[in-house]
Image 1 (spheres, rainbow, N blue to C red):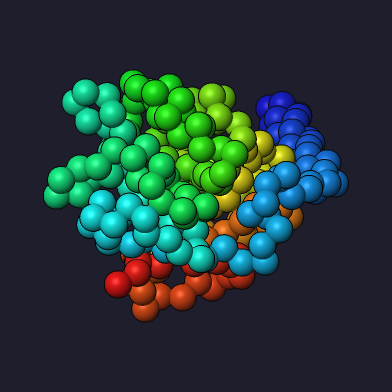
Image 2: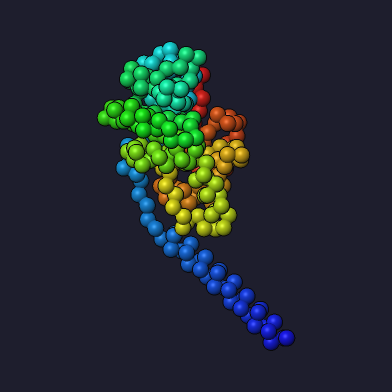
Length: 234
């Protein structure tokens, strides 16, 4: 009986030791990877300043321009056209055509891939004169657009954030694939956008950019270094 118990304890201890060594080795391998900035002009900027203007400003004055990156929410109409949801919705393509604004962050309100190809076709026509990034909380939307328009930059979706938190809690963040180009962090825990110092350190090691969303809580400041802010313009 004692011999069997001793064997069980020895086996358990051996498995635990091997597991610890395996985790340490995998983390070490992940930490040795080298990363470079994506080949996009935004990564030449030391800081990203993103502004969210009033929607009516964009719809009533499509020639609106800013020195910042302009974030604009868009959604799909019943006819499949992608619009800015003003009191009188305006087609995104119409605003892009009339506005001299160069840098755009498209926040996409969608949970499926219906008509996303139409969005790519209409927006990519402006790739020679404008630069685009996508902020799509739904992972299925972000992944589909990444395949169709790899020339754009992509913010982390909710699924990617939760995956980062899970592996970070296991001390394995250095080994997972982190495909988004940048992260929109905030003081809001519910959607997973509240990052911790260790996660930010790993993201910066991978040359990812971190934006702090002040529209969630303008009074709250991050406890980690950031690469820009998302603010609401008056």
